[in-house]
Length: 107
Image (cartoon, rainbow, N blue to C red; front, side, top):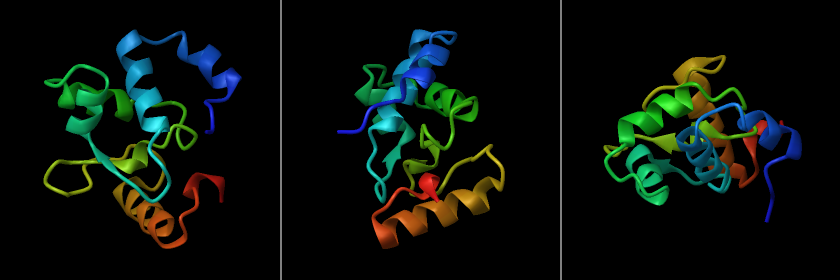
C-alpha cells in the first residue's frame, strides 16, 4: 500500500483536521477509480459535508500527489478541477488512468 510522502504529511499539519481527512481519503482512491464528493464525506465520517469536501479539494495544494481529479459528482458529472488545465485535464487524467490502470500524476 502506498503512503503519503512524509514531506506532504508535514505540510498537511498546517491545515484543518477536516482537510487532512479529505486529502487522506482522496489519496487512497486507486488509479482508474473514482469516488463522489458524497462518498468521501461519508468515508471520513461527515456524511452531510459533500460541499465542504469539494472546497477542501479545490484548495488541495498537493495535487497531483493527492489525486483530487479522482473525485466526481454524485450524478456522474466531473465537478470542478482547479489545477492547471481545469476540467479538460481532469477528464484526460481519469480516461488515461482507466485505460492504463496507472497513476496519471506520475507521467
